[in-house]
Length: 98
Image (cartoon, rainbow, N blue to C red; front, side, top):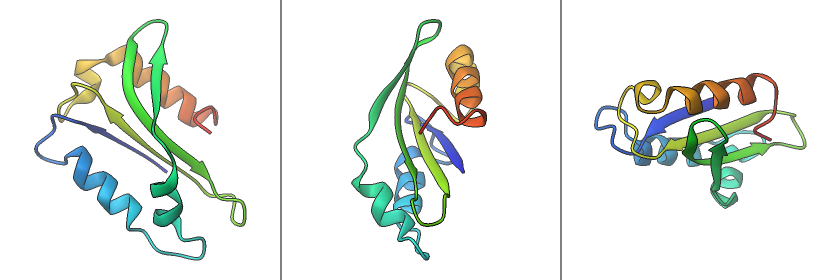
């Protein structure tokens, strides 16, 4: 699962999305463990700094979860940084966020 949110998005804002994700319950305390992950800068050669990412793979279930906070991104973050969004989506598909 990957959630992408721009920090200037007033419709589905990044803070609300992160709070929702870090509140997830389940067999592996998904939210609690994601909350403990320190955000890392997500930067690409073409596209520059996209924002930050919190990504975690759970040992017991193999589940993967990631939250990308797009710096200066609005509701359509792909319009704010198309190359960065495309690259992060490819990284998600190929398992490179973890």
